[in-house]
Length: 180
Image 1 (cartoon, rainbow, N blue to C red):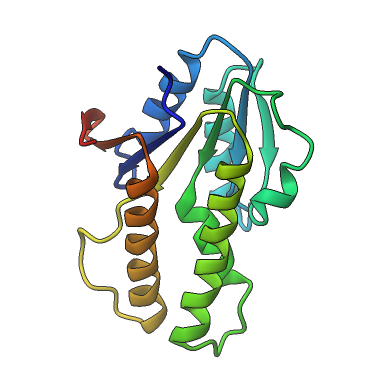
Image 2: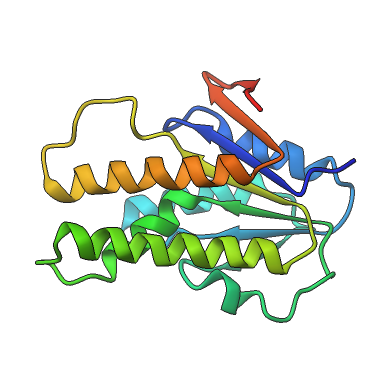
């Protein structure tokens, strides 16, 4: 039986996107790739170009840095698998939309809206989902309030998604470990 939701976690450059793409490719069907990164500078443009080049040309790519449910209104039953890469960039976008003087409550609420929207999209669409997300809580304590709040909301989002998931993989050094 195909899992409804698979969560792929790992650190930066751990191999999580490559692994998630391999999982999606096993469907041998129509794949929708949801890219959540927004290109804001040259470095991000290079990263996105590398990700684009790594995907099969037969996959459909939808760039949705926010409002996942709204962006998927017309695709019910069209795709055999939906791969979203990544939850971390989706949460990052929720922070970027805030005023510079946003407090911890505003940051937390904004990220919760983004995760609720993603969960709604998963529940509304019958296709199996694969989500890629960063494990950001294993490093140093961030220096800024925004960094600490982001680490915390990312950790809580990963916990919620892992609780919902049928399968959870942790990737380190390119090696997948099934943890659920």
